[in-house]
Length: 229
Ligand SMILES: C[S@@+](CC[C@H](N)C(=O)[O-])C[C@H]1O[C@@H](n2cnc3c(N)ncnc32)[C@H](O)[C@@H]1O
Image (tube, rainbow, N blue to C red; front, side):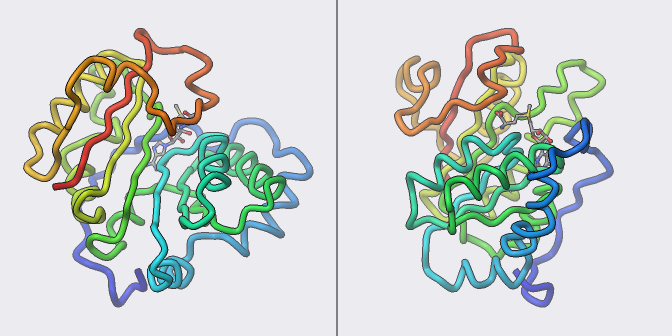
């Protein structure tokens, strides 16, 4: 992960896949945690290197929102190191609060875009990637801002271990079709779903996210678990 170890960067282009990075003023405790906790758990190159050297499983959540899923998964899986990426600073503040409240010691936070991190990870180091209820960018002229693109799928393939998985969830029918089409076009992923219940029922280890409960999309949530060949 250190700069000298980084592989050739992928060309992402100028597209921003996220919306606002700050809304309301941070709550006082969250603002304090930015100064106290974040410096201790920020996903710096050195900390990611140490996590890689530890031999523990490494799971990545991209766009963790308020961090409820990230914190709950980290609490349920203490032997795994988690990296959570989120550019929305109020979400980072909320996640820091969950991490503090849960006394979690196995989470690293990157308060920013996940794509440079993906570029800089060594090959075949991640066990799992979660992208849950990604920004749908439903208007056709905004589709190019969707996080799932052939380039991101190639970056997932590079960073995942063989047998590693990407969980993609959405409640927008068009984004579900979009993601499925692109993952199935990739030579690097299998989609082992056999029946409808494999994608229209939350997986046993899923933790409901805050955005999911809002039901803002135009379909019931779908969950795709893609497997790195
Ligand atoms: C619709 S929200 C869902 C949040 C959360 N996963 C949930 O289900 O409650 C999508 C989140 O993805 C984040 N996001 C978008 N592009 C991102 C990127 N390139 N890297 C990291 N996070 C990103 C956004 O800031 C936003 O908070």
